[in-house]
Image: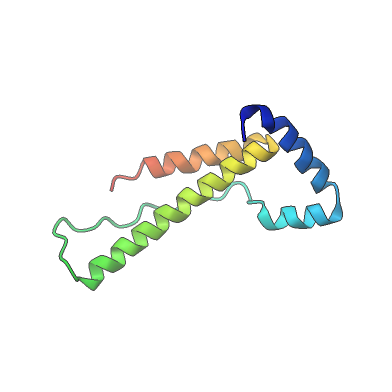
Length: 104
């Protein structure tokens, strides 16, 4: 997919959404705008001990939170590319900036 392909992709999506089947599919793949990014997860303690289930649990929570937030930002960015609607681009940027602001 190149920058030159975007107008044709947006036209295709608009035509698809104009059909009942396409609108049904759109509702399944689209993402609501205005969702709030998650809070930064708790940082791991300085002394990380091997085989400590509590540390592993904290790590998993942090990993899952960051992964989910990154995936949401990606979905917003993709929706912006597909539709050209600035609301998706703004939300993608907002989520990425929130992730970048995390300290740990």
